[in-house]
Image (cartoon, rainbow, N blue to C red; front, top):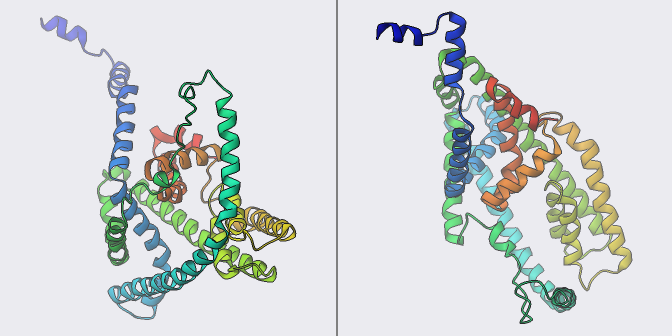
Length: 360
């Protein structure tokens, strides 16, 4: 019996290393289960996770302002409170002003919705006619047309009602405040969660993620403000109705990856139904396209640089996955989440191939 046991043991250190590596190598099924578990947690915990991530992004944006107040010899708690209250007041003022303008805008726009409905109805009739010409398609035997996808429901996933969204948003200022006041403690405590040999890597990784998120958020904010100001000015020169409202919307819609230019064009065109002629339509399209090209070739490289280092395929798949999981808020958070994942992959030896796949 002892001889049999001895024969089963490794005969050399090399054999022991090989056998241990074979035991420690994770099976692909376990990896698939782990990925599915993470996606399930993200799907079912979308509201909580989205609120935490939004608060984290805001904290990264406001951290430099708080540090400036601290250098003016204000206590950290007081500096964080001033910054958070200033942002809350700014958001409340913008919401109040925007709501008044939006109500006026909708009331004026309602006079011209009949034209838009006529165009949509004609297009729908053509689609139904083409669909009915396909007799082999199931469901068309009785002349009925399958209802289309409810995109509003998809984009508002995670915020089932106004009261639920308001309750979730009410946590954001408090989370931002505590993230600002406890940022050093959270970072050091997070590093201490790792084994001693991995703490330096964890510290460097967290620093890179912090720099990436701050650069991404501040850069997009500055680009959005620039696009909004220029769009508002150009729409005002063109005597566009509600240019001060539509210009801001169009400018910030340009930040949406890939679809931004289409959304930025669609917003003023839809708002100008019944107000603008073909020449103004052409000028609006040229203006938005010119701003978008300028932002892609000049502003994004200058403000964002090479912080993200994601290839277009990875960005597109990230938008698809996170948009499916979290709706509209997922589209906003998809790029920073994926960029943070890439930074982690690049600093974990076993995950470096995945980081290379996401990279440029």
